[in-house]
Length: 327
Image (cartoon, rainbow, N blue to C red; front, side, top):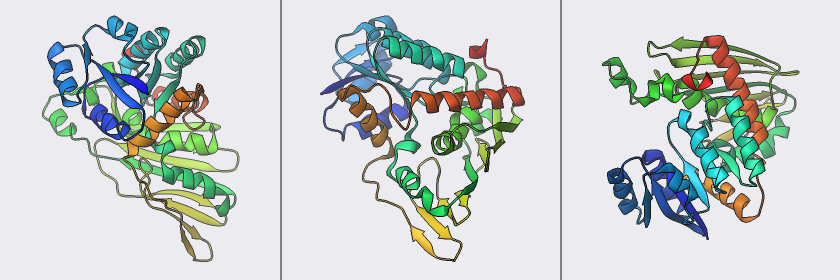
């Protein structure tokens, strides 16, 4: 049995709990919220025994061994480090923190205290992403990666009315690149490593964050193009183009249908069945690490997260996106 505490009482936390409850050995014992009313409301919904409104008391609690963090991005570092210093294993929502410098500090604390630290980026742990990895050799020398994730934010209508919600506030280290773009970049890093050069572009909003953007990457033998947006929708698929064929992925953030189109015209469907909600797989990966005494995932490894956040830092530098957390 692995007992969990949670920080962040929002819809994403609810999705995580619902998915994790399918895993044998998952137990949610403690809820943290800044207000007793919200903590109690959330605890009742999931039949949780303990609530805390003091973060230090929460981190020191003996009622759980692992914590799932799903608060605004700028709060992740402080909350995760406090928990890890109290011996708690940490699964932290993507983006795991505001910048690579903060992430390195978090990794150092995790290693010092012998606890698991993992970025909760679901895509790279899903069955169909694993199928992509296993079948990548079939398309020969890879020449290009093209990924798109553009999703009109439900909060953008409020923004246009003059109401700036958390999703568009720089003080929470938000914006399109961090919230949406990471889904196009992290899988690229897992598949192909760090690029040699980066060229980022963005449409900036008056609140100080990016509404959408695109990035060009150059590797030794291939290039990559990613597009992301919170102010417009896109319906294009993701492609990995090779000399012998192209892998077509329906949705890079949650791949469900994956095909190889070979240059001779034949098509191979390499999709595999996904039997659980998408967040199940990140929860299962994290729990396996803790229960087997391993300290980092091979997919969502410290290295992959650090490369990704170094890339995000460089893109933000180029587009002039600075967060208070960077200061």
